[in-house]
Image (cartoon, rainbow, N blue to C red):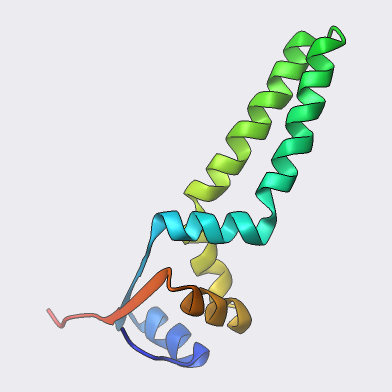
Amino acid sequence: MLSLSHREFVSAFHDGAINVTFDPKGAARFISARLLLPLFMMPVLGIGVALALTGWIWTGLSVIALGIIVPRLIKRGAPRFLMQQMMEDEELYREVLHAGIMQVATREPA
């Protein structure tokens, strides 16, 4: 694993000099914790259940589905989201490196 400053990382990535890989599960956990997804999901599910129980069955089921699907979609796209955000945010870059969910390696010449 390479030890690069944020500026070196961004430059090397744009030049194609490095390969960046993420642990998908680690990235999903990182994003979930950073965005507080469980705290988002629980009230949304509660609202969906309340709507379904008060007669708005399809609306309630739709809200429940959104409360389940949206966090999963966010977690699935976590590596791309992190990569995009790390290009602009040095603090996030350091946090991701410290969390150990990203590996940086030099690209082999062709």
